[in-house]
Image (cartoon, rainbow, N blue to C red):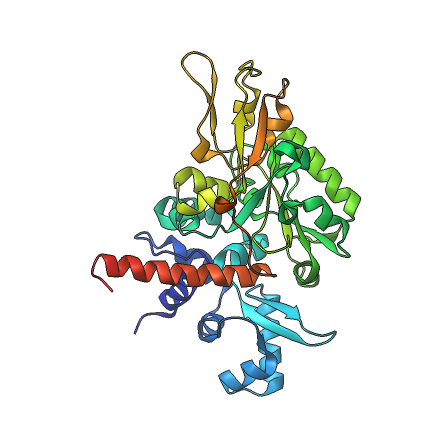
Length: 371
């Protein structure tokens, strides 16, 4: 019988973008740190999707009281997620490694965790991150003005979404927390509290005390985003029908961006609904946009001209806001290339990603005769 840690890895490998096995075994280091074997066994047996206390009690053969206590204990350890379906009752679900177990347990990070994550990225996790069609998150234009003819999609209008929120909670960024263990200081680690959550997600983060949570108002968040543009941070949001979370991501230490630099997987082209275009008649090849581009999609050719590698453009708009001659703009992709979130909540979206992964993996194995 496989040991419980390999069974836990396999469970996580079936969620969202997966959790690959490595020769070095670095994937087990953090799991053993945050799970007990009893916790791991409970997690492995949990059914997909949201489950009520009564459903969990029946599944595990427990009393209602014992099941509720067990679920709350798992949530206190940041190993599960809950949503309220009325003013008092909760439903619970297990969470993938990213976004989930890793981010929610960032207060346990140390230098060894940061080192192991780097090894894990280089040995399969980065490739899994960018593999498959559905993106883990989507990049938003830094503001509506960077999109040609004002064709910003309503689903990407973060200002409208933010203005109607009754609860916004900021939490620490796991990517920047990892960067804080580097021997060389990076300015992005001066403020870790740059991930923002709305609605039910915000309630969970606040009540479970994840990443030094604090309530922020609309003006503070919009001001923070304006500041992000000035220093060259880009925006990522949950890939849901309506935005449920926004992160101010730095090009130096964003985990998803790091994965994109390692692997040009199929979800990269679906990471944004926009792409950059350059007006060569207005471009002076000053190089400002080249410096700002998070994924090095812009470069100077041997003749000193600014050139674009469109396959690497993530549609963030940072090049547009810095261009002194207004030679750069984002254009909306053709309708048949647009990607929209289909689910209301981030974890429903991630469950869909896991289902997509299972189908694609099965097809790939069948293609090589290993099904």
